[in-house]
Length: 203
Picture 1 (cartoon, rainbow, N blue to C red):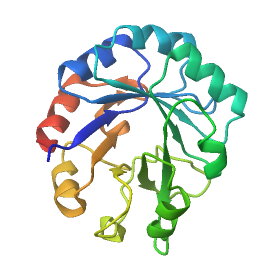
Picture 2 (cartoon, rainbow, N blue to C red):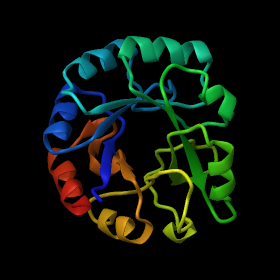
Picture 3 (tube, one colour):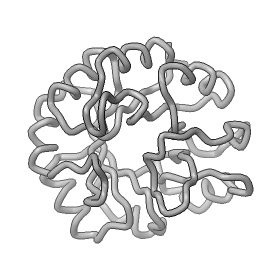
């Protein structure tokens, strides 16, 4: 099975274009205002308008107001929503777009329980737990914590880079992988050579 790839924290059209040319399946726009990779919905719309068919555009949120989700999803014409905060299943499922729920993993995290609770999600995104950080830590968690069988597809995230992604895939067998800082030259600025190397690692 081929592993899908999402590059998150896209802020520039040239980065999106390069990512797509290199075979990325999805690009992520961060709509959490406190992030250094935050993008205005209108800018995301412009980038999204240049994306060819069959590439998914994803909006990333952290405990947002429902109105903000609806507004950004409409303006940016999103395909999928990604929630990184303490959003309830009821909150996540109320929108026109399907969603994935990010879980910050640490020892003791019951991923089977999360999969049951968020059964309305298209999948779970497994990220690294860090105090007071909803994501984007740049650090990997212990991949041994991922159960062999999850009832939902999962996206592996957190500290992935060209050097470790092959090992991460081999150990956890995810549906997809998600990368941001691991393919950057600077925050919000992607590096073509790193994306290329990351895609080679996935393959």
